[in-house]
Length: 406
Ligand code: FAD
Ligand code: NAD
Image (cartoon, rainbow, N blue to C red):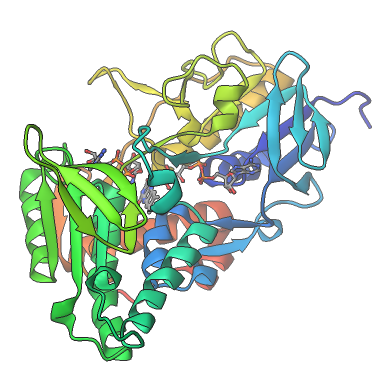
């Protein structure tokens, strides 16, 4: 048994953290390193399914699984705790209930919603971020419907849902709402025509940068299902009564709503900023080997990292697809740091992007091919199942996968 084995600490059991840890046990042997994984909860949740849990179209328990079920417990020490700070100079992580010393640390704490300092959003809007926020949003929407017919005054703001941001998260959530609202109307004896779903997008188009034909398809489908779009219109303030929105140089408009959902982007985890790394909106521009510049024992991956696309000279958008691929490179590079060998440069292999529009519709570009409708929806489920397979193998895929293809 080797003495003084290097200590590797992985922070976060999201897509990046779990891919790292499941591959790391293949690249380093039991005598090469001590491996510790820290996560706030004892479960991993599928961030990429949170629009479904938030709308109530998929139960949150379907979107999570126990971490111990996918890690090699004889090799990985799992610590359920909350990371409070990373002290880079002291090579230690401060947890809510103690601290951990490390030789190498992998930071995969994900993202938090970006509110751009807009007044009232943190206090009054609902983010789509994790199991807790999703469960709350689902319950809140249902409570508005349940309350509506119990009050003497029929309040339209209870039946008005505003979604800020028509990026992929906003659009996927609207797709779920389009399916969920008719169910809620039926359950609570409410006429569908009384319900307003309003999407407010600051950019001149929905899904900025995405294929225009697929954008048209998505907008048309959502409009047909009762979604109103306010394009080129920014959310300016959120209050307990609703939101103020406006177009440039025009009088702002107040929309009364008890449910304002904030889906207008993310920033890296605040702990990464507080640790003192140079960052852009909480994301650290990592070296090609995924280490933080100037810190040879610190890897950062997933939504807290920023990786440049050399072709476009812009950062890759933060996605699970990239976080998972980065996990493999981080695991390999940790193996090489410990056992010897040149570090690998991370090369993203972007297979495409698919956005769901409810359970049976979607739009996407996969391997350069445009897809819409049933084929796109089929592909989306294949992608969801693939990510389960890569982390937890066939057993997890059969347990948690999506197989209702049509
Ligand atoms: P995460 O997977 O978010 O994991 C972070 C982990 O860190 C979590 O387990 C969390 O509990 C833990 N953690 C956080 N703070 C602490 C703390 N202080 N202490 C301890 N543990 C902590 N991307 C795609 O590629 N395809 C998609 O279809 C797609 N769909 C999406 C749909 C929605 C609704 C959203 C919101 C995002 C979607 N994304 C998608 C983006 C994708 O989810 C993220 O890019 C991805 O989750 C990033 O992975 P990560 O490993 O960095 O972080
Ligand atoms: P995003 O940054 O992709 O989109 C946010 C949208 O909000 C933008 O269109 C922006 O113009 C708009 N916005 C910003 N400020 C606003 C304001 N004040 N008022 C109105 N609109 C405003 O963020 P996202 O949709 O949360 O996605 C986050 C990341 O997760 C992205 O990298 C995305 O690619 C990824 N994601 C991928 C998928 C998928 O592949 N199916 C699904 C969800 C998220």
